[in-house]
Image (cartoon, rainbow, N blue to C red; front, top):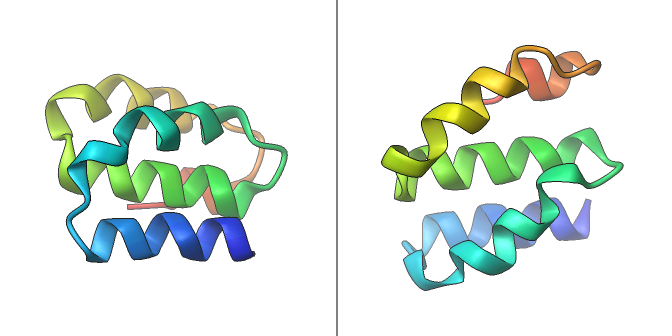
Length: 68
């Protein structure tokens, strides 16, 4: 939960320069972290986020599937 909150905090701060560090977490075991990565990328880098958002529809966890 701490990692997910940290990524959400970066998103709220519009910290676009952290994108490479955030994307490393896209395969994290926690669905909350994966969801926070999707929210970050969708808001701050939508041009890079579209493929990730499409792939998230196939995620095994509904938390990730419902992330926006």
